[in-house]
Length: 562
Image: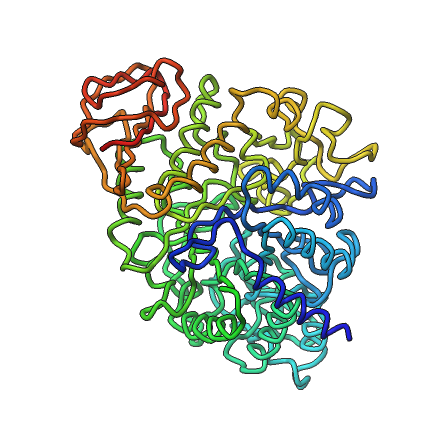
């Protein structure tokens, strides 16, 4: 009966009509707004200081009003929480601190009623060292699951002689010596996150079974964590050493032996076949930090049979407030990807300082945040955002090493202070703990600016960043040109203003002043009828010409042009 109910829930999920679904038959995700929730930090429902599933359910009306089409949940599976859920000990259950499977089913049911889909975070590269698979694997060299992980002899007996020079992304050697069996196991990330051996067909079968478990419960798809790192060089050749040191004091490496090997694409094609076998346009989203647009292109597959939405980190994580570079990166996504490859832009996530902190100048931060939002919602890409981004939440980096919770910061302090700063609790109002929790102490402290930056205060302020986001999201949803039009850059020699046109009927021209000085420009696009669609400057509301358009500092303007 339980399985039947799960399958029925799956069918219902497929039949839900999302606001992002288009009449021309496009899949729902092509025009979607996907909202990442870090469950520990969104809403605490039981007063223990940690966010949970019932807390998320209680805030669904807020997400619907914002215009969210799908929520991506960072891992909610049982876990020792060494890496706050990215070290999984059971792929087919919910960690008790977040709730139960029944709570998950209720969240999904309530989300469906509001036209919101659920996307799970699937960590396929590694498990927790407390997962039963690894406990068996580590028990002896002859255990049937020994080959489920990457075990090798060192270059000499005993500890201190790893098989090669490979490094963990979180500092120092990627090889952990096991006294019991006298071998090393490989961990691309923490020592408590041993890498699965994807060259073993049994591993793929077990992981795909877990994917089916959640698809049968009705989830709309998966965000695939660290997906390019599934395979390593079977010959164990050393990585090429590059000049300089990283934040952990290790030599920089090229990472061609442990990242983005060709075999990754074989797995993605099989995973795509599996998800495509379910109705409802299930989606695969990739955590894909690629060095250029052509590497990103490979993640879609030669026949568009791998990821539907590999994340384009080239735009949102450029980390330089430079018109020319944004113009080039956005244009790459528009012109360098083959027809049918849908871009996915993202400016914020749980692993990086918030965009307002990275791009803000300390004086015009909110104005800069409005420009970032305009780029996210007026380009052709599917949009992904992070909880609190719509409020202007800032990075609240711990000031003392003893306050650090993230092991990245514990290991790398003071050069690397960890990711706690971008994971602080959601700021709902100006009450205790920003309305996140009634607990005397929350898992991370609420940001000090919560009494000013919060949902309650911004909802009633028509000039707030939250209401700016709402207006942008609604316009993107209702304007056919912003949904479907191609993008062409205009005034490409201008180093101060980013200008482009979305072509349709009518066309939509977007102009963004990146500077603290007024900028006057003649937009090189013909049109006799100009009507402002949205601006953050009252004086630009009546703009009727593209000639001698003067944009105040950090102004945003876009309008229809016929």
